[in-house]
Length: 485
Image 1 (cartoon, rainbow, N blue to C red):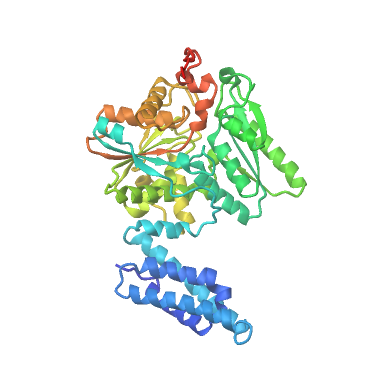
Image 2: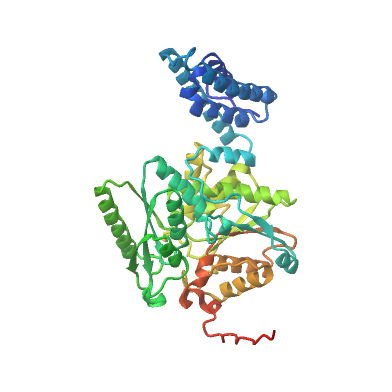
């Protein structure tokens, strides 16, 4: 059922009026096209999705789009100068287009659930610098599915590109950098533990976009020792020649303590001030890329997973993922709430979700609501969002970036069964949680389950204090075999 605006008018009335204005003042498309026609197309395609007159209006709008472009191109120099009157008509058309789009958003907030393709239309409004390779692959883990009696799939954000070692932060970086470019930023400063996946991916994205990345990294020297060589993500940062600053943080690899957090923030702000004094424009991005413009990134991850599952005849029952800084779940959860899809999220945490902690359920709720507001939609209630969040804290192990026996076993299980490699800091612990849920009966036989591989593979090459038993430093080296020719 199509909703009405507060004045009783239907969205189609404004679509028609705007189209008529454009038909009469074709040359004005140069003034209004980006805002008006885009708004009209969005409104007529989405807000009036179920109406009987949808097809005729869509055709009229598309024909008009083509006519306006053709007429403007041929008449601009001789027949249709951009007069003040035409500008006024253009502005009026743009105004109507925006109002029509607002009507669409009102209808969608109070009406039926969105379709998956509508998510992409919403997403297309956001500034974005395309860097990764999307959609990322989605495939069935045939051997583990057969072994455990479920249909187990994997979404490969680790293959997002542009390099071979990537992850889920690349989507976030596309939006953050897209907005940064729009704002004239030329330098991105971000932070993390010295082995940060996010930092490496943001540095990669910044370089591809023509920006300068700077990293501020902390290292728990009590556990991981002093920095003596470059491994894992740190080696990749070095290969990219990224400006990197190190701060020792004994006993606090993830900068959980307020004094450590303040030290890092002070150091970043000092470097920012130096650069700004040189005329640079700098953006500071928090740990994990947890910056508001990036929160909607994984709306499209959800869309891709559901579509890719349907392409092989499957409706997903569960989506499992590892959660750390809380940048993947809000976008996926917002997409679920917008579409009404029945899939359940199960988040395996690598950091404690506690009320007084730097990441918790309340923060996830606020990020979901921020995504709705970004799309000019009325956010759901806190309770509606909280009811969709299920976080399992049992697989953290001793601490962040500290290996666990469960994680090591899970990494080996997947590598041996499917030839897919997880990381010891994030995805290994997440997959360990999934395997335990299977063993404990938390997943019913025949369930359709997707695991979101968010990356972390570079950390397989880290120090033993991170990798643990996987490294095999004490295992005997195979002796060479003499080959006879």
